[in-house]
Amino acid sequence: MFDANRYDGRMPYRRCGDSGLFLPAISLGFWHNFGRVDDFQEARRIMRRAFDRGITHFDLANNYGPPPGSAEENVGRILAEDFACHRDELVISTKAGHEMWHGPYGEWGSRKHLLSSLDQSLRRLKLPYVDIFYSHRPDPETRLEETMSALATAVHSGKALYVGISKYPLKRLKKAVKLLKDMGIRCLIYQPPYSILNRWPEAEGILDWLLEEGIGCVVFSPLAQGMLTPKYLDGIPSGSRAARPEGFLKIEQVEAQQEKIRSLGALAAARGMPLHHLALQWALRLPSVTSAIIGARNVAQLDDCLGALKAGTPDEALLAAIDAISPIQRTGRETNA
Ligand SMILES: NC(=O)c1ccc[n+]([C@@H]2O[C@H](COP(=O)([O-])OP(=O)(O)OC[C@H]3O[C@@H](n4cnc5c(N)ncnc54)[C@H](OP(=O)(O)O)[C@@H]3O)[C@@H](O)[C@H]2O)c1
Image (cartoon, rainbow, N blue to C red; front, side, top):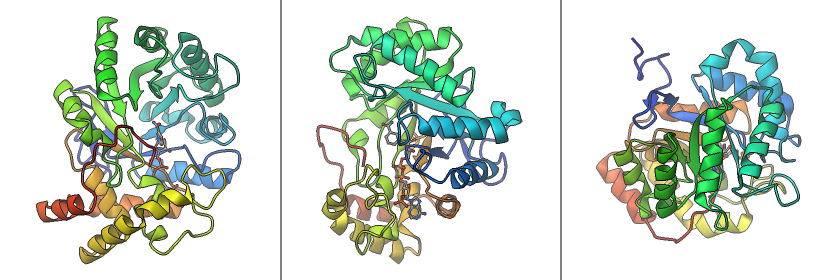
């Protein structure tokens, strides 16, 4: 019988909401570090190492790169060359909704965009289906019925096993989930940004609602794009995401958070652990959170992050100290970091 906590003795697996699907507590994402600008051989080593260490869930989107699409191309090559006999041991996710190609069909929530994009993703990934297909962001102009019908078609056509929704605010999420249900499709999973520095899903009440509904939740950027590691404690190191021109993390964002980062670093040090281990255990502490998707620039970072699985769940005193430094605040909008 499958024991979710002891499958391979290293990686805990958690049930995704009340579905039949288990996901690893830590998943790996390819937003950065897997594009054509990156070192392909290192990307391959990261992916192989991740799988060897029990990471069975790889998260993509049509536009990951740069250039857009190149992360799926690289992953498609690695899947074909190294993982061909492991397909049934993997959960591969992709998304559509952010700008992918020029013109009126290259982004947002139309059926035209979502279903064309899914076909393109499958070609790049060299796969007949993905496990999870997401609507990547809410589209304020398109009727939700249209976007959700595209997700339903993805499942009915066999091109996706499950569907998910990313970054929708609670009211729109509830409506989307209901529409999908009316079409006979369950929303498997929701994907928000969530870290000690970005508590938007808590502020919105989304995490509690997901738990009530039995919908899984995979949180992205649990390290706040690297801000919740020791690397930015003393400035901006060269080669870091904030220093790279193609990186989505801006130096101003790091500077704005520096005081909190230093306080959190001191808190972690007082407990004898690195800041990123604290950040990952914090993100995984709630029963509503199925998995945290990290990014890694090299194998050493990946291994270092997986070391967090040995750290315990933060106790009440530690949680209170974190709350004092970075309380839940209603920002009115999500951000990636
Ligand atoms: N649904 C969405 O809209 C959405 C949006 C964003 C992300 N995502 C998903 O979430 C995934 C993860 O996002 P993320 O990359 O922002 O996650 P993250 O884990 O918060 O940040 C990853 C970055 O932190 C740094 N890092 C990681 N481990 C480290 C270590 N041990 N020591 C020092 N630095 C370390 C590296 O940056 P350096 O390069 O600076 O070393 C790494 O690239 C993405 O790949 C994507 O799959 C989804």
